[in-house]
Length: 166
Image (cartoon, rainbow, N blue to C red):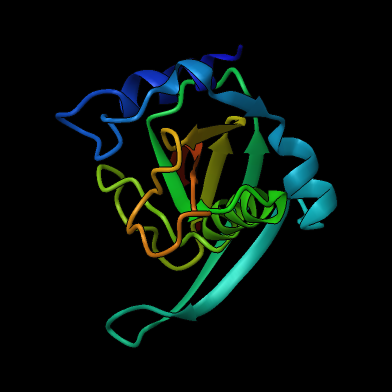
């Protein structure tokens, strides 16, 4: 397994920093992130994001997206779903995490916000996918839908760096 995979398992299992500490990550699997970002989502390795910040000021960021399973990641993002075991739910969670990263919709609070013209380098590791199965007919969530016996959590380790613009 990669270094980023080990990072997420350790960090997610720490109750002082994670709401996922009650989950058993010993059977989690690793999914290669490069094909997801570059082939499935068809993202370039460098692109610009424009828009307005919370103050209404115009912003322009250059984004560099790097996939490195052995990077020293510093935080992670995740998505979870309770479902009937249909594989499409797992695919959807992976896409939700990837889109959140690509649009800078998740951020390490220890990193300053970028300024106009800065480059944001986002390094991702591989996806960690955890599938959990409810005990003998016991559903996750409520018992009104007993077929909802699977909970999937997808985590994506990240590192964000700001490279100051001109």
